[in-house]
Image 1 (cartoon, rainbow, N blue to C red):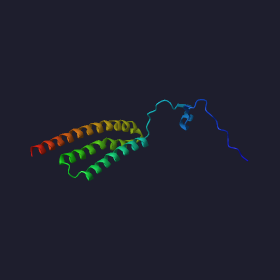
Image 2 (image 1 turned 120 degrees about the vertical axis):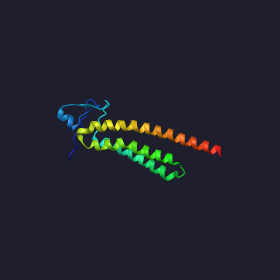
Image 3 (image 1 turned 60 degrees about the vertical axis):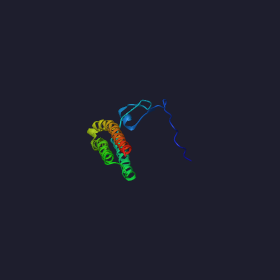
Image 4 (image 1 turned 45 degrees about the horizontal axis):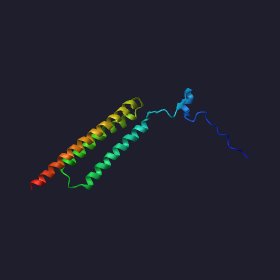
Length: 138
């Protein structure tokens, strides 16, 4: 009967040796924050944001047919503007020399998304206030 090979325990469980690091003779501390992204990570983040924005746009379009034209236009433009940095970042991520630019563009995309949603909220509030004032005048 063959027994399983003995399990070798590392002296420090927080140290990980990957194949690439072994080749270089380096050790990686898993407790250290490492924000390195690979192209697949960037594309996955971007795809998630784009899919979420498109789903929300679809839900908005289907559920609220009484909404004013300004709101529909504003939501559509906001969605397009918000997903563009993420789409361009995904395209850059496929070129390994452009990976840093793709990371930066994803970061800028989050800023654009926050600003666009803030502007959208203001526009919707203005439109809603205008509609409430119009209903009071009648």
